[in-house]
Image (cartoon, rainbow, N blue to C red; front, side):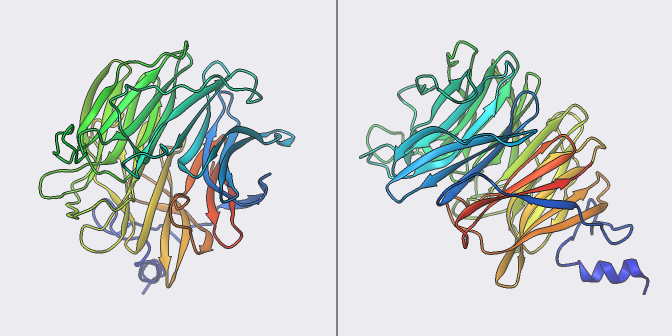
Length: 406
């Protein structure tokens, strides 16, 4: 048997089923050049998020918790190193989702955080607040709740994207029609809702992106110019929960496309979603499914901004999921996810082409991962490097790895 055949057997449990079967290897995939960066966190850090400024600097946000309060902080990776960590907000108890700090087109910063509603009848009820800083995060505007009073935000389910002209898009899962009291319709539908906040910090009327979605899988939103794409786990008759993508703009006009018909029938939300990355030369989505009882990570490319998707490439048939994807300049994609290795998980990163060729692959970390609220991975590309973040439950801190990808 030649070397390719031997390698195919060795990695069959990791990389299976490409566009028309098994992902292909021209030769053993090279590892990425990688280095770990020490973050300027203190105490227990968790609930991380990665983004970037308008001029392409990495932003890392996280939560430092002491058991009674949660403090949302962020730092920026500048040429001379990490900026002084600054506080966005401090709240009593836990934050329902990782705080987000991202750059807007005019150089200012926007922040979003999700505190639970005190004494709410629904334990999953939360609010979303937005604030803006024009001085690099030293001070923040008065927090804004950019939605109507009728909204009932479902926890841990927000996604954001920066738009031109200093605007920001916000997407959330809403349970106003999923309540059980007489004031609700009792139809048990969770809706995917959105709004766009303009440069004057005014929110547009709410937009319904999808009237019936899976409740606990977080959405992921990205933008290319004025075009927005939000990927999410849909909900269809017969408890089918596959991945869909909705294209929309600030004025609304949502158009939904199925990413792939995996046919996952499950009587509850798996809390294991998907991600999307848009570029001028293509769009890529990565997601998790267990339609046949096996945890699989898949990725699919789109050449028309998410209106249609190619057949999926399967990267792992023994995975825990929590996938992220990035488009690279050469038209390939970078995908990160949690794979399984015995009793432990591995944080794996692979570079895959549209034809299913895996040219690079690295295991960044092997060990345990925390449960909610810090079980997700983070990934973003800045220049020639991709940054991957995770929370280490042993060291009780957020960790960050830089990989050279171009």
